[in-house]
Structures are given as C-alpha cells and as structure tokens.
Length: 530
Image (cartoon, rainbow, N blue to C red; front, side, top):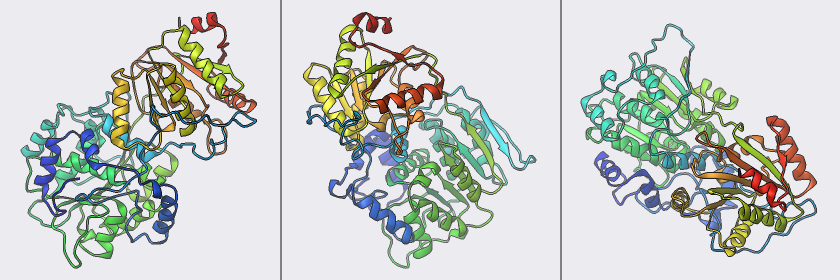
C-alpha cells in the first residue's frame, strides 16, 4: 500500500488516507491478476487452507502493505476494442464455451466494489428491525454524534470524514456498541449504510492508549477488504495519534519472539491466527473487542470460517463481539449465533427491487446472429438512453462488443479479468454517458445504480450451476432499469427450447407476464418505447 515499513505508526496511515480517496487507493494497490495462477491456484490453496489452517491464507487473499501485491480474482474482461471470434452455437442454442468460462457472482468482489463505489451514505427508507435476546438490555437511538459523548478528538475525526449526522443504522447501532457494559451485536445491512464507520468508531472508542498491547482485532475475508477498513480507521483516528493501528495481512511479517504493541489489528483470519496462536505475538485473552466484518463473504471463502472459530475460542468471555453481514441467510445466522452470545440483532432490509414498473419482453431467435440482429433492430427503431446487456460468458461478451463497435455503437465491456481500477474506470465512464452500452457478465448483476439505464437485455438468460432459471439474478439484472421510480424495459433473447423453458420459469416465479416481441416488426418495437 505504501513504501513505509510494516511497523510504521498510524501517522503513515493517516497521511495516506488524507492524500487519496478510497477509489484512488485501490489504483495504488495494483490488484493485478496473475494469469498463470488463476485456474489452478485457488483450488490448491483452498485444499491447503482447510488442511493447515494455521498457515498463511491462500494467494488470492492478503499481500504485504509495503510491496507490490499479487493478484486477486477481482475482475477482468475483454477489451471493447477487441473482436474475438464468434462462439460456436450448439444444438440447444448454448455456446460451446458457456460451461467453461461462465462467470459466477463473486461475493468478495461485489463487496469490495460496493465499498469503493458508494463513497457517500445510501439513503434508506427501510425501517430498522431490532431483536434482543435479553429484553432488559438498554436500547437507545441518537440523532447527532454529539449525543454519543465521544472523545473530542474522535468526534473531530468523524466530522472530518464528512459525516454530519448518523445514518439510520448508526442511530441505533452506535449507542449499543458504545454502551457500558459492552453489548454484543449482530448487524445486517447493505453496503453504503454506514456500518463500517459504526464499528470502526466503536473500535477506536474502546482503546486505552496507555496499554501498549493489542486490544481490538477486526477480521476481514480478503486483503482488499481489510485495507478498506484500515483506511476508514486511519481517517477517523486522524486526531488520535496515540492510537496505533496495524495490518495483519499476507506479507506483513513479524520477527520470532516479538510482541506487538499496536492497539488495533485489522487483517485476515489466517494471518491473525498465525500471529496470535502460532507466534504468540499478542495475547488473545486481552482482546476487548472482536469484530467480524463481511461475514457472508467469510463463509463463502473456504477455510475462513474454521479460522474465525479458532480465534474466537481463545478470546475471553468478557470480549465484546461485533458481527456484520450484508445478507441474512440461514448459514450466516447460524455462524453468527455461534460466534456472538446474547446479541442485540439489528437488521436494515435492502430496498426491495420491484418488477412493477418494468415492461418485460422475450424475442425468439434461432442463433447468436439473430440475437444480435434483434438488438440492432431495437436500436434502429427506439431511442435508447443507456443499455446494459448481460452475457453468460466472457467470450460472448467479447464477440458482441466487437460486433456492436463495428456497427458504430459506443460500447464498454465489464467481465472477469479487469483490475479493480479498470473496472471502476469503466463504470465511471458509463455513468458519465461516455459509453451508451455496457456489456457485462454476472459481475454486475447487483448493486450498481445508473439512472440513465432504460433498457436491460439478457443476451443469455441467467441460470444456476444446475442449469435452472436463476430468478434472483434475473431480478437483480433487470432491476438495473426502472430505477428511481422510472419505467424500464427488459428484453430476453431466447434461442432454444431450453432457454424458452427458463424464460417461462422466471415468468411463473414472479407471476409477471413476459410478452412476446417480434423484433422484425418496427411497429411493435415502437410501441415498447412509448
């Protein structure tokens, strides 16, 4: 992250945080994919991780803060300038490559991207739901940061970050996290609602700078997410130079027999397990605050769940537990209930995506070329603000981008092999209207709001690993249009009996009709745009 040594104090963190916005910081991370390791390494590393959890995490996780990081599997795509050869269609209309390079939604990638994109707080109209195992537990809410009675230096840091008033989740979470005696908490909310700032403020508030040993540990599932949390902590602690922060990520080494004097350690499970148990660089029994962030991503990363549990078992019963997740699935909650005894549970529901203001159509095609012709016909008849086209594979996305570019369309492509910096540049350009068409795979199926998007095209309908209709992904995809109360159009290109069955399954699931559209009939096309 910087050229400073690993042992540098919080001053270096603060200077870095002041100098650069988080999105620029990711550029500095140079998160490049090591192509020669991208296929074999993750599987091998996962096996190693499970077999030997005390060792360092797999290569895709953390890297040193003081050297050039290795690659992650964060993102990548074909350049829109390229024109790969057309994928061969099989009998059922699926491309030959569809099972080979189909891109699945990656929760770690999505979480990182959301943290970077959502620089400000997301305004939520959803209600807070609070559950208490112990009804005698106090429960307060605040409307100002002053009401929290923070140390003046911390309050100064909060305002310096641009937080003028607590977000909806902060209003309820912060008084609970800062209460005496400490309260355990499980919190669920989408990215951008202020949960990271909430637990970081609690972490900083609990530190006693006079005690020169680790008092707070914060676990993140990947190197990049740990860096994100660290930067928030650095900015918030800007006026508290006595609080020392440290990364525990891959590549950060400590000498044998040394004892850590930093107050807060932010890192990944494997490295923290090594430092705390294998090398005994700090006493886990003295930890007063344990934060587990991005728990849903943690569970999805092989080996991490076991490592978190091993660390958790070493903590004292008086340690305050904070558990954060963007989702609330059963396996996440089972993990949470194991980690966090007698919690206050706070949920902030996601804004529900609705199909009510989206007109849905399907177009019958015989092959890939007819699919492209259908898109061309639609563009030739109605005025399209901006469009997002979803493909099943990178190869199809590259082929389609080449065809559309040749026909004069301004096209960007987003799929599996771009660096984070490149991915952000593509999205920024699309948001600014510099490209009118964004062709993407599942990496963009959820979470990105672009107000000008009027049409979403499913060049390939979404399916799960068993080849069945993936209704959740369909909802997230076409939810990219019809945002902000506007009407949107979703067009599904159907090229086989199988894809027709998937279309019908989606229609049945949502109980919303998907109308047949004759893409050869300009009058019909004109009607959908009216």
